[in-house]
Image 1 (cartoon, rainbow, N blue to C red):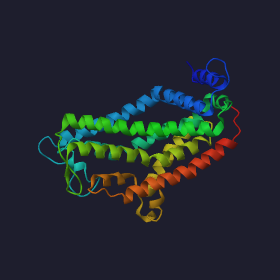
Image 2 (image 1 turned 45 degrees about the vertical axis):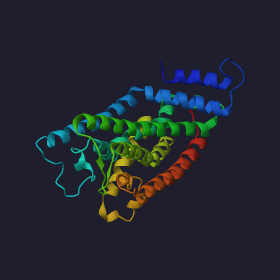
Image 3 (image 1 turned 90 degrees about the horizontal axis):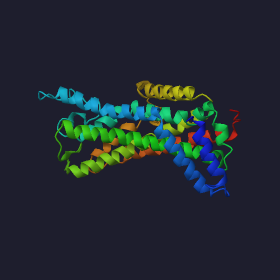
Image 4 (image 1 turned 60 degrees about the vertical axis):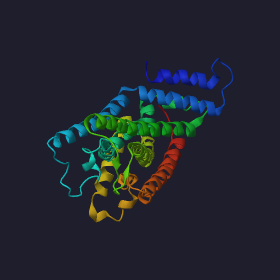
Length: 304
């Protein structure tokens, strides 16, 4: 089945009702399109391959740490580089969740999200299905909203995939038990799992701004490959700028600058200041680039 065929079937139902009757309510049309979009997204081999790669990263990290510590050694040299909890992986497997998220967040997670979100609109245009979708009664605004919600859902699923893979790997390779937080407080294993869930949600929230940027880029072109390449290229460029000390004045305004603030969840009490800055910045990027994507998408001339 081609990409256009399920679109045609969904549109036939949405435009006339399930049995040829009057069109359903707008909210039902939107929900039906969202379900269709989610189903198509998570059934694509590309999406499954991205999730498989993300799931493999914690396994590789866990094996590497296991090999390095098998003779009683420690991870790192204690020089303060990298996440402060990475040295705790060999003592408690739950720390592999935090380490895996820290490893994948700078590049792997946003790259996967960029591929899906960058292809959201441009891929439809390249396949020739965007014009057909825009005939539907919900209009461009709701279609853009559905694309955004689908990309955000993938972002959450990708983050949870990394966390679950890391947790299972940590349970297999390392001992587990009470969790000693960065502040020195020891909490039960159950509370450690709860903090892992909070961290996963914070990490997913950290990608909201990047999703908005990717959708905006996707609205500018009719080439899915060009949109994905531009999105990933922008990510790399911003990461480079964020690592140049001489440009420290602009660092707080870059969308990835506060990404690793989720480590503050591992304190008692939780330090919310940096996390709030991070989520607030993501909300700002969502508002700015979401509005830009809406302005571009609702005014563009779709001819394919």
